[in-house]
Amino acid sequence: MFENLIDRLENSFKLLKGEGRITEINVAETLKDIRKALLDADVSYKIAKGFCDDVKEKALGQDVLKAVRPGQMLTKIVHDELARLMGGEAIDINIKGAPGVVLVAGLQGSGKTTFSGKLALNCRTKRGLKTMLVACDVYRPAAIEQLKILGEQTEVFVYHEEGVQDPVKIAKNAISKAKQEGYSLVIVDTAGRLAIDEQMMAEITAIKKAVNPTETLFVVDSMTGQDAVETAKTFNDRLDFDGVVLTKLDGDTRGGAALSIRAVVNKPIKFVSAGEKMDALDVFHPKRIADRILGMGDVVSLVEKAQEQYNEEEARRLQRKLAKDQFTLSDFFDQIQQIKKMGNIKDLASMIPGMGKALKDVEMDNDAFKGIEAIIQSMTKEERENPSLLNGSRRRRIAEGSGTSIAEINRLVKQFEDTRKMMKNMAGGGAAKAMRAMGSMRKR
Image 1 (tube, one colour):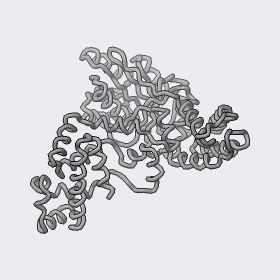
Image 2 (cartoon, rainbow, N blue to C red; image 1 turned 180 degrees about the vertical axis):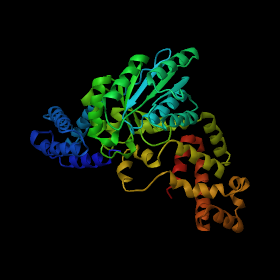
Image 3 (cartoon, rainbow, N blue to C red; image 1 turned 60 degrees about the vertical axis):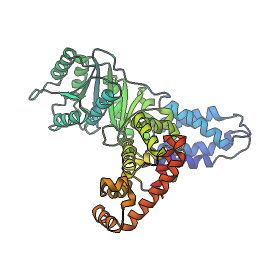
């Protein structure tokens, strides 16, 4: 995401000239290019101009320390203004109540139903809440069935009423059931339309009045750019929602919606969703997004994703095996699965400062592990535990079974043995060092 904007802003800062101070003359060309970059990112002219005016006001006349170049100083100012433009701080949803009620609204195709399922999983697993999903889209033929499937995937109960065409009644009955059965949270998925119409607005307003939600979220497809911003404004004028959810952010290389929507509706972006996996939902952190836009990475988010997959007992078990030189290909395979659960490999790598630019034109996704996985899965348990058993005939069998070559198997086994020796020497430094060493193995 934001790939085009990242490239343009990086080039903009190269234009800055001057020594010791940022002046109106040496900053003018840079701000002109930044404004063009924002417009190309589908940010409205008014917001782009206001942003550059704010940056100029803060930048002019600032003393630049000897150890800091004018370009670096301006980068810091732009970073702070980007974060402010997007809201400054992350703001959590309000799910307090007995039960808390989250009303989800948006146009058809924006990703409302999928987001509802993701939020339900997030609240059940990370917040420990007994959660109910409510199917109030009585118009789209597959909507209820889609929510039921998501409920099965997330292990969340889905309330629906077959044949009932009154979404207000369904929502009220769901709340009553939730109170009776001790649910902590109710997430109401509502109907959308291909475009805004009075019937939809009247219906969602009636549902909100009936269930009195503690949180109303507007879901918008970030790939629609300024159209998303205008749709959000129309919804907010009628619904007065509490926050915005940006979906399909993985397909949005411009980022105009993320940069503009807070300024237009004065409501925070609370979640961003990228990808179809049910755990692909992140809290929106303006400062971290600003870091990524300016190519600074997002190490904090990377660490948080790692912690979600981190199992302390498993880490201790792994450390003991490393110390005893008992780390096997089975252990390596398990670690690959943990890494893949963290998300798209290229997205994860781009969170490391400087890596986003380096990997810009590199094709890298979770399929990069496919060859290694196929080889290991084609081995017997004994072969995975003891690669020294892999003679010529066994390697030919594994090559045929995995669709690879004997040369690839030879390379994997050699790299594994070299890495295992290195990991044993590093075992005293903890499992974290060992994991980093393993990561380097795939790149060879």
